[in-house]
Image 1 (cartoon, rainbow, N blue to C red):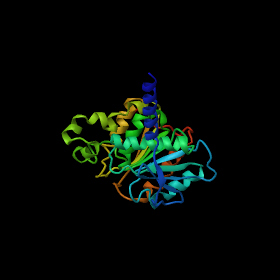
Image 2: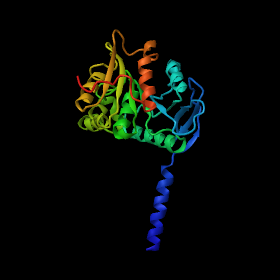
Image 3: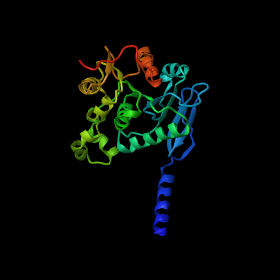
Length: 274
């Protein structure tokens, strides 16, 4: 009995040790002064406001691929920092919202909350393919989300990158992923997020060919409202999936993110029905 108990204790200890992320210095270039580091070999970053101490409100930015966040995000980030809000993210590669990417996101979340005194309810800021990444984490952890903001975010695997291209990231053949799409696709898994009262705000163009409005933000809004969720989609006429400055200098988007990162009510509540 003693030997068995000792073995169990050793196994639990080994599992606990394995669960701790490995954090090492990083070299990722950032658009504003911050800390670049690696978590389990993946580039990550934090940009802190002055005098950040505990229960730090924060914005979770994605995708944190090479070159992102970029100088285009400086206007937004400066406004977040001025309100005492940190920005953070991790590069999970072209994960397309896969379970492996979600697990890395959870490890970053745990590290920031448990080791760096970050608050428990960040506002998520999803740009383009970052939508799949952040929404896939959010629907699994709805009680840990203060709000979701998006700049032409991808909401459906079937729309982008398409099932065939995404399948490898899921470790599945294309026909397997297609058969199990509703199990993984964030747009099919929104109910827990809506029931948790998480507000959503997206901005997207009406001529977006890469991430079409109807298959992504518009469809998400329709489904989210059917579950009683609060969502607003600001449609920008004549804009597509591009680097138009207005995406990154939207006062309405910045106000939403700031309010939800700070846990404050919105000035105008998003619609919960059509």
